[in-house]
Every structure is written in structure tokens, then in C-alpha cells.
Image (cartoon, rainbow, N blue to C red; front, top):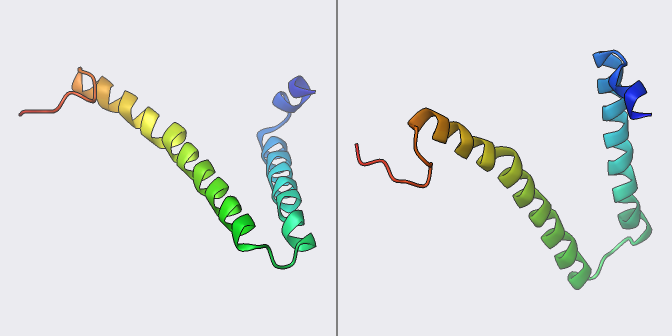
Length: 84
């Protein structure tokens, strides 16, 4: 199935990926539609999980590639401070 998806046109692949992301968002919203007013503890857990997901996304998608680019440009590990 992945091979068929990968060999399709980029427009079709983008549309299918967007549809899949939208469906995943809708499925993720279903528990809130069933539970009208979550308790304080449940709300704290959900907000904590969302914050962890966003931190992981920012770290793996932005910080690590940025450190690699900085190392390529500076010629030394990015954690070594620049003195000049």
C-alpha cells in the first residue's frame, strides 16, 4: 500500500495526507464531544499531553536540524561557544 501511495502524484499524495490528518484530528476530538465538561484533573492531563507533544515536535523538527546546520557552518560542534 505504501508503494502505491509513494508512486502516486504529489497532489494526490498531499490531498490524501491532509485527509488523513483531518480524520485523525476529528477522532482525537471525539472524547471531548462525549464528555461535555471534563474534570480539572482530566483537563490538566490533556493539556500536559498536548504540551509534551508540542515540545517533542519543536525539538525533533527544529532544534536538532538547526544544530546540525550550525555545526556545518561553524565547523565545530554547536555546543562549543564562539569566542570571536
